[in-house]
Image 1 (cartoon, rainbow, N blue to C red):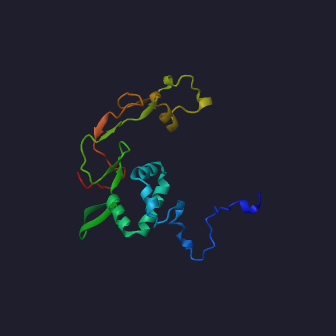
Image 2: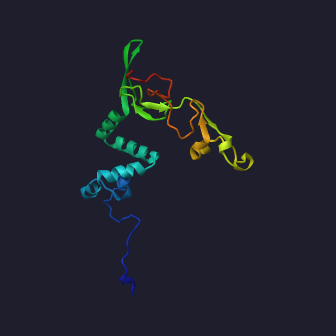
Image 3: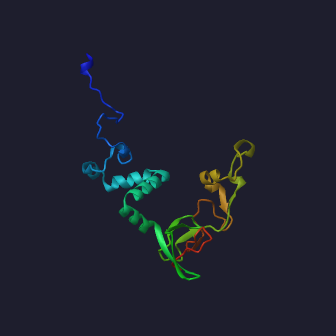
Length: 192
């Protein structure tokens, strides 16, 4: 075989074309370019949803930030989804504030939309503390295995812990229902 029998494939993405825009690498990340409708059409909504579900939170935040910076329509759509308007009484009348639309519940840890009216049984939680049951940690030696009462053990062995509020083991659903409460001390609820 001679050298002429081999085809050279450039995998670096570098070209000798002087008309290439060097600053467009961000737009073409992963081989996608904005103008190729065939590539975009091949990606179904289900595939996109699967990719979003499997992408870690930090890269998703970066993608949203980049898209919002590039396109005012995307920026406005994200604002509608992520912000809420709060009318508060200020010194000189009504003050309109933009607040996060999503809160994390202090009791159950779930995220909820502050624009949705609160209902009495939306939150299910334990008001008590999880306590390690030493007799359930069979052959556990703290000198060898470390402490029993750790976050890691609570996740790995929930059946070895008991809720102080209801005496149920750590696998039991909450014993108290109520309305979601925001974690922060600020009064951000728009709907009572």
